[in-house]
Length: 152
Image (cartoon, rainbow, N blue to C red; front, side, top):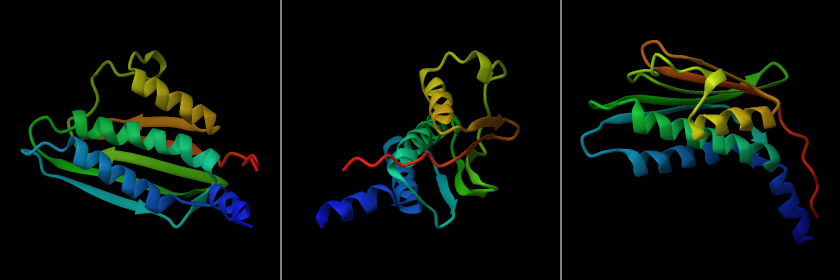
């Protein structure tokens, strides 16, 4: 009886609670005493299986970490994380109103291990990764839920 409860939990993870908790932990780890950064969320009530939430969480971890590490060298701003349905799939957006990306940033010729990881994890989710960098940075990941593989 207990194993079916565990299996149901692995197939049905509360995305909002997971992502908000993860992003807040990152904020407390990287926020400097001289910074004032607001963390905002727009996350729909969505449940995803563990095979989807694991790569999604790693993507959120990398993008939110990069925002706190690089977007606000001279003070503060805002980091926004949103997740919602997008047609048959989902759209994750991580955005900040910081300094933007370097002029030579290019998804096709990445040298950063973290951004390579984001691109590979997006591929694992059968997704598409896009970005804009004007008046801040915004990454968008369109993805589909991965078919859950029963383990028990």
